[in-house]
Image 1 (cartoon, rainbow, N blue to C red):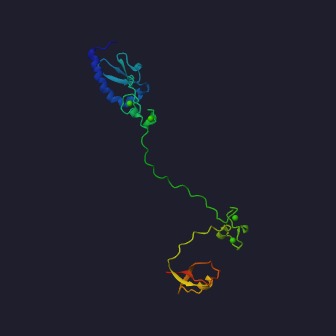
Image 2 (cartoon, rainbow, N blue to C red; image 1 turned 60 degrees about the vertical axis):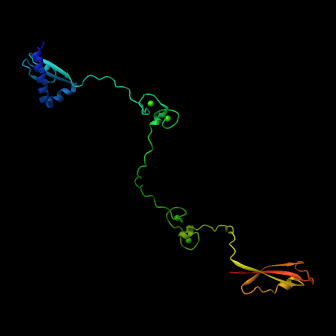
Image 3 (spheres, rainbow, N blue to C red; image 1 turned 180 degrees about the horizontal axis):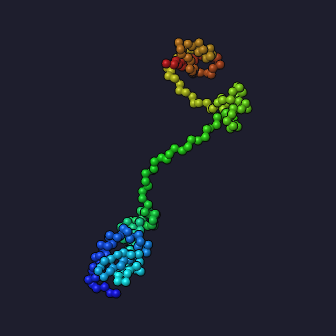
Length: 230
Ligand SMILES: [Ca+2]
Ligand SMILES: [Ca+2]
Ligand SMILES: [Ca+2]
Ligand SMILES: [Ca+2]
């Protein structure tokens, strides 16, 4: 049956009103098929039904899709490296400078380090240094130094080799002076009696002439160096 234009207008208005009223009650009935079915009587009154077969003989069956037809395909998206959005890999978009413009250039700067993680579970108790067999017990065989006790003193290893001697220390401040005199005969016998004074000592002897041990009657010039710590 073909509906008149007036009837169609009445039906449209009625559909909106009726749909709002019965939507809550009937939506669950129609949603399974993605279709809404209704029946309109000649007076323009509309009732929502579960299917077109529920319309009475004088009613006109109506139906609507819940979901509309698919829309047109969207435009292609931009690559993450395409900073200027021109669709082209430009040299300036080689952010990481590896000579290629690709997904690696999309990587952002390194973030701040995260907060420290929770404290882990407590570890097992350690072994005492004297517990050579690791059984947790002080065994007689672990009394290494033989003092009758098994304790930290048994952890002492053998004595090592002595280390090399250290560098010589600085000579303390000294005050030196020279003694000169002339004498003959053995140099040894002539300077041995020299007294440099309280707290002073003979640091060196120099004489112009034969070596010590020679015994000449000539006069020789002796230079005695005396020194004293300040
Ligand atoms: Ca580009
Ligand atoms: Ca790159
Ligand atoms: Ca043990
Ligand atoms: Ca011991």
